[in-house]
Length: 195
Image (cartoon, rainbow, N blue to C red):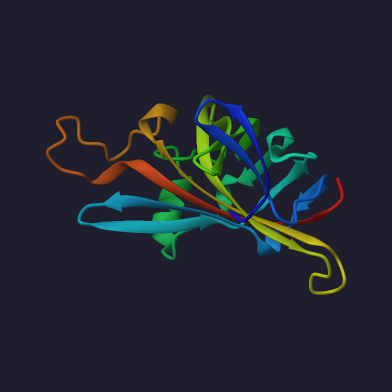
């Protein structure tokens, strides 16, 4: 991240305010936002995404004052294979009939090694666990495509399926990986002004 100002917040920790940073309330644009994941399956990795995402980002005067809320429609999952996608929607995995929405609510944004780590509560099904995401500020475009201001972020993290009670395909004796426990998460968000 490029730096416009720095302030020491704790020993060994420097808060960096990115160049171009502005305070405001932003609505996530689902047409320009991707929530993706990658999970090991046998000897390869399956990649997928959720197509229906909504939420709000509030940027404070400084990044540490930010907050994020997001809702993801679980039935919108796609991996490019209809049979696999329908299995992911079933009770073996997401159980979308009982739990149609996954939610994320941030609790803190802290500096770490010149970048930022966003902490928050991720709820999948009826289980809530803390998630930490490494966040990159992509900047602000004051004119967008049609004259509207746009803000962008990218984030990376990982979760354990087991932590959320999604155990299908996990080998009890760890001798064979059918579906891996670790799910890598990649998020690219574009948002426009407004609540």
